[in-house]
Length: 169
Image 1 (cartoon, one colour):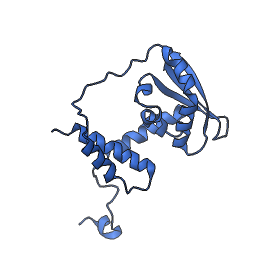
Image 2 (cartoon, helix red, strand yellow):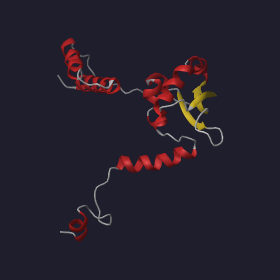
Image 3 (cartoon, helix red, strand yellow):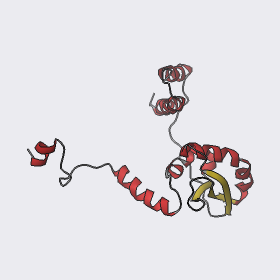
């Protein structure tokens, strides 16, 4: 047995082992995002869940700017497809609220919209997805009924429905 394993009860840091690629990529991405002002990279990672699938196809955050030596009152800069900028302007309060939920406090105060022409809407790939039966939906809802956290409950319900809808009949 390896000497370090006997001595400390854990694997030596000098020996090789499998590492989760996702963790390594997140570390690299976090460094790049911090340079762009994204102290909390979860805003970028979870952008689709913050604003919704449709809005995320033609609107995305480019940077986050905090006032000097402060963690409140940041401005989030968004690139928006020109024709959709008015819609994003009307949705500002909702986007701010949902973004601040990620931080856990009112970190972002303003949104600055930049109209761009180069955003290509993501191509939608049609997948073999079927509609759930009433019994299947009921089963998913009942399965997560005992979950105390509403956010976790919603996530589990969405996951369950997605898995069942892709299941081959």
